[in-house]
Image 1 (cartoon, protein in one colour):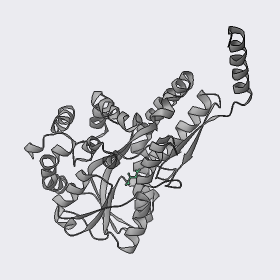
Image 2 (tube, protein in one colour):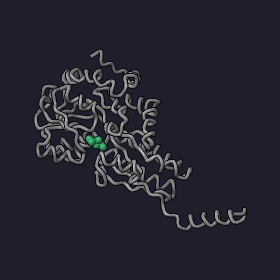
Image 3 (cartoon, rainbow, N blue to C red):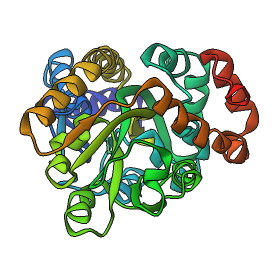
Length: 333
Ligand code: LMR
């Protein structure tokens, strides 16, 4: 081909691209309701992506496991059936990235400020980088909140969990956390929890209140204890090949949309959980118990051995670097 014909075909190609400029579609699948911190942040991202790219990118959000359940969505992302997810940090073990389970250690974070020292600093960045060999690019961390225990019997002390079948996410650290108080952990997809609670397949669970409320779990759990014993948040992830192949200007706009969505997600998380708690109380279906300082300490002490027992699961050095950021010291309990 001579220079002129190369130029002509390049011109023709760019002409046909601009004529048939179909939007780039990003399928964003998640498992929670629209009206949760993650649901709202996903919708916010979709809106900003549309605005910033001037319609070049259309983000289709599929909430509430309408497309895929927990385990399937990870597989769907890897094969490119969807492009974006925001799984809970407790769900990366099956993918082979066990380090994310560091977020599941009981009582490791006191509050969001503690947490952000990790998610928004070098530790967070190095965790996201661990996804790349799996064909996944980690874009950001989004908050949900701190988990509380629910069951059909009062939970005021660790002994109250003994022998209870408790639904957990697919994390070995959470498995050990439940075993540390004599409970029987059962891994189950989020979409199946309500049914399992209502039929007695499991006795109880742990959740941030926004998840409990939007899945109506409070209607089938008579007791909720505000233990705030552990954290649940998300990593927003994309199919790496898809992301890398986006035109650079589009990718830049999406990065900006993600930055804004992250600020938004982290701003609304606490408020959404507070509102959900108010609704749960208003429903009158669940007795909400606030443990005393001493009662909460009893859970903390009972679960402290999880830190030594499971350190190797995530890597002792990683765990220590998190302690350094947050000031948590399990040996002082
Ligand atoms: C759960 O399975 O309990 C949560 O990970 C659901 C979610 O995405 O918040």
